[in-house]
Length: 406
Image (tube, rainbow, N blue to C red):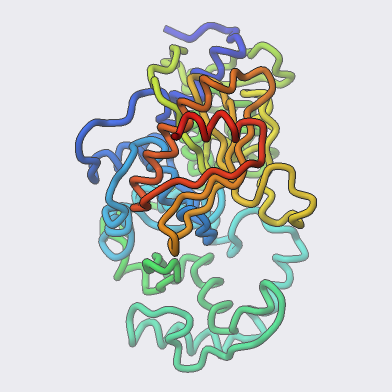
């Protein structure tokens, strides 16, 4: 049975929240690898990011869905023989290792994810100009085994900004990683470790046939639809950073046999798509949920605004005097609405979770939100191993939150 051809905006939110694993209560008891495996199978990928103000986003995303868990489980599931692998998905992401064949077309293009032509040209020129050095790096990885860029015999360090600050050794390894010549995983300190794919990925994956680019795109678009619940063409393409022009015929090929179903959504200008078994139901989660700024529910700001009427941007790179809400701001999901946002920092020296600002959305009842937020903030504090919470005075929710947390 196919879903209704028209969805209300409320039903669209329900589908999106459910698809992202945020509609059900968090599991009770110990959260283990089975829970983590089910989570990433549902959402397809977890973005990686180096920012460690609260904790890194790859750890926050599972917390939002599962509650407190042992992050060593997640770390153990990556790396040699692990169930997950790192590559360029939406950005640098960890994904189920069985997806690796679906990214070989991207490896053949030798670029992370839809680079601008000028950047791609610059990379290609560097690659060809430094062929002998790259060959030496390739031999060293083959002979020595797993190593970081800093462990290279000849890393050729240099100074500069951003890309130009990286050593030539890191540039070579990163380009080899993009091309699939090496696989990589992260240390506890977030540094990439590189090794040959045959020493990292399972033989079953390496022996798996390489799909055509069209087959891979269809698989990724179908995975995006599963993770998004309901999505426009642009939403589907963006989830794994596919060119919309290339995605459009692949979506049509999924619609024709009924693997995707076209629907209209109240207030959405563009055609949307969902899975044939999609059934919108109200979220059953009765507690609030803090979301990483890099959570896949809110990756695309236009989609976040369309779904939740919540305007959000990361202000990490905004000069402090120009920030509206703060440096590292986590939205709060309650029911089917994004109701507040908090500028947080884990202060390890004082063992406190700092709430530097607390803002409720317009029209939200501060008392109800503050009570729910206080419980969720305390859950985050406990999971992070901090002793207390310190709530500042910035934001229209700060007073009610201090009262609720007292």
